[in-house]
Length: 77
Image (cartoon, rainbow, N blue to C red; front, side):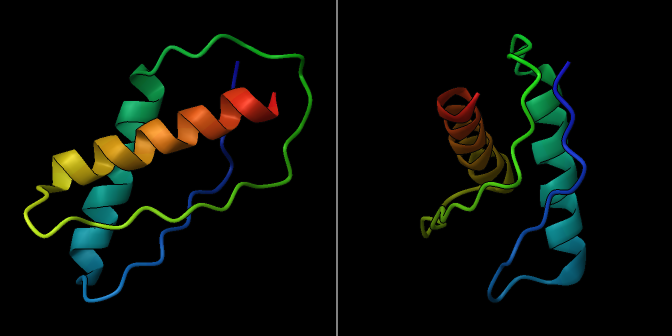
């Protein structure tokens, strides 16, 4: 099982409610990602930057962020 204790987003120009909705959608997508358990090693943290495109919907941005998190986790585990 993979556990994420904390997900922090730093967003410029976004309202608080929009940020909470985006974080909730990312959590849902990560839950559905179906990653296989790794070696049990703990990862202290991951940092990444994903720029929003001008016409991204919240779902598209959440998907791109989730994809990057999954890629980073696969490289780290």
